[in-house]
Length: 598
Image 1 (cartoon, rainbow, N blue to C red):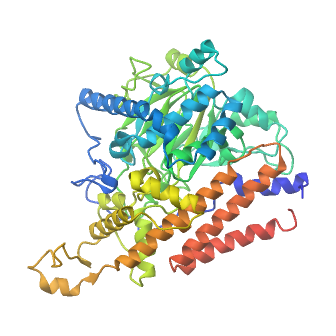
Image 2: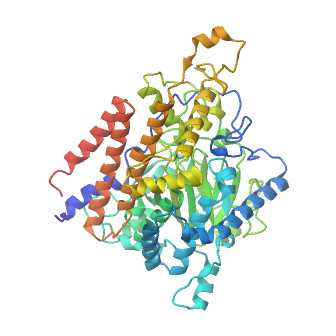
Image 3: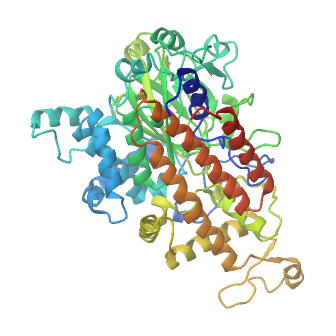
């Protein structure tokens, strides 16, 4: 049954605000506790971090030349990994070739075969790069310039060699979303994004995120004039954009398949001359930023020390919370991101943007402005040259924290199911961030994990996980639990004896960890009964996207409801009735509001 226009409008707020009402995430333990030392390096404190990641990110390296050299070395290593992985991108047995073929075809129908192939090669290669996994992921931000993303790996449109060369010179990111074509296409539709509030645009209050809808009357179609007016003097943005624009839906599918994680894309558009596009804030998502048009200055910082009474570290600078520059210190990255560039920002790393100031960057094409002195800025004629057109960037979120795919959430679920206390105050910043790392699923699972995931998918969510892969996840979770509460658990070494023979009295007061069977049940659930249906729902949401077709809006709405149901089931599995009931009430409230519409 097709919707009447007014009914169509009623569905849009349910999918445009977020891909789920789990935007704030699940708090797996008490978050804001005083810390004695600043967090200068994610995963610091000695030793290899979970997922076998190196913890040496050198955030406070005072030697700018060494830091720049290290960054260049990392970028070059990643690019080498991408090139080496190119043949595997087409032959990896763990990849759903039917889905990638569809996504690349859909992508190419709106851009080109060259850009489609290069996009897949880049995304697959990045997720397969040992350097990215071990030295960058959830550890440090990283900027890859346009000329470094251009992958001359063959392909083409009908043998037109000249066209291939021109498109490769242009880069695959450039032009994926433009104002004149893609943004203009919402004229006459019910799509309505958000705009930053007037108090931010007018400089009245620039230290916290405030926004409102582009149009006041949501019952009528959007006009191009409303969009232009909203863009005058500030940022406009569109959440869950992959469910509304076909090119972005295809990009989401390619990202999901490459990384094996839930993904979601937002679009941000800012005219030149905006002093504060967005104030300093943090996000729950690890993001890949694709600058498709114009330029924007980004400053990315290390997470500040958690402090008592402050907001969730993954949600700073929002809902009235203020994240000041004094609290942040010097940026890890201070650079103007230009069309064709790609920026990775880990979850929880504060960032702020503008389109009116430039930094001292002698080489426009080389990512050597990490840790530059951002006080040496040019703001007049240089800024006019750099910011000479509207900035458009896509933010691809890899949603491990949103969907509870972290060690902290594994622990939260396991302890509740085992009838043990899960509440915890964490005084150590390093222990907090270690626990909030993504579990070893998707591209983090290694070869065994990828193949095991492929088998689960081929069997429709059934089957057993690879034993070695499952054992590895059990040991990783145990490691996190012991790091968080070293004095709580009675831990035996491989010989079956206690590690600390000199403290028998304390050992008697300690608890036994849950059994390996209980660990295994939680891991099975997270992979087979939680992650698998989430990925299936997103694949459905991002296929066959047409913003002018009512069925696209209906499908996107239904998918958000299915996602709510998944989180509802997760609450029930974890024996947390409050969480289960919260998601149930949200789902049922939406059903009541849309009753009789479909």
